[in-house]
Image (tube, rainbow, N blue to C red):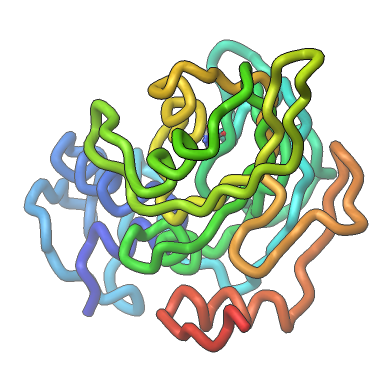
Length: 247
Ligand code: URA
């Protein structure tokens, strides 16, 4: 037996929290009856779960892709306003894949896509603190001590940020810009941009260059590749809190 919201998330319908809202909104039925109680248990072998009338099932054939997202694509599966989405960059795939988290429209770089809802939920769960590294070009020459303070944690409107690692790559004195790598373990909305806005050095350019153990090597902008089996098992180990998978 599995909790309904966990089952919906594992099937890739939505994140666990968003799935709770779908249940509360009466969009989910179990064996034909609308269920609005969180924590209702279902037996996926026996019960028929529907979301907006469509049967919800766990995929049996999991696929995993690493995309080098260009700017100008949004990280959703569909967009009501007809904007380009990251799915437009992949050929038609019969599996119903979705992005693992988000990159802003104007952010480029490494984005995973999969139909494995369970792994997605784990990778995004704050508890596991999966590291993500961003290469940022920011406005102004940011003093080292300011970067140190930023790395130890800064108060944003949604709370104090967890410790980050920042490596200065270049001070461009002529154009008054700083190029750096920042590694964060959280995944709040527009987090890197907001962190630099808070110290009055707004981001000019942002690219995610690493996600957990993965990097962009060999994948040109706008291109993608499937993950190797070994990379998938490493991610699964990480998502289960196995620190050795980092080494
Ligand atoms: N932080 C941001 O500000 N934007 C992203 O797309 C990812 C992290």
